[in-house]
Image (cartoon, rainbow, N blue to C red; front, top):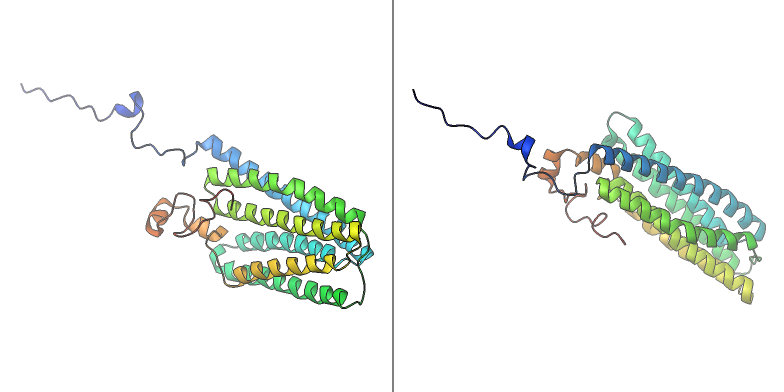
Length: 261
């Protein structure tokens, strides 16, 4: 009787690790749950802080006639409204169908902010009113400058490990708030220390320029690392077809490749 050779193809999975197992890009199920929970907490913390920041900045800005503080507060409002627009986008059955509308809303909001702040800053420069010293504004800018970098880094790190392009992109928005805080702090400090009232509207104009840049990117529909793009690339077959880099980013995108960007 012929003896059938022993087959060794059924046991390796139970006795040895597979040589084709995914590297660090594939987190365990428990780890992914933990990372998702962390990202939700980071986003909730960011939105909560932005709401408080907006109320404080707008109130202090109106009291001190500070164009920079008002612009900073309005930017915080737009950051919250952007999150709301994305939430509306994903409340529907087809998020990609709503993406362009959400981007137009976000872009239009940034343009409106830039226009308002520019007009107000130019009025101040032309002598219609000088910004007063604002201790509350200085404290707010300093606190934001201390809080936002750490929050952005933590969310970006979790997003990169999870492979979530939307989380990484949102962390970059949080990082933008750090730059705005620095601009605001310099403008308010120069006005308070040296009486350079022109420093406040100049800082406001810098904020307006940054807002225009953000508005142009949103209005143009730059979804390199948008949430809908991340969902589309979440499927392994779609990622392979689109040339995904392992971070849910399309070819040529840099949102996940540079942790300091």
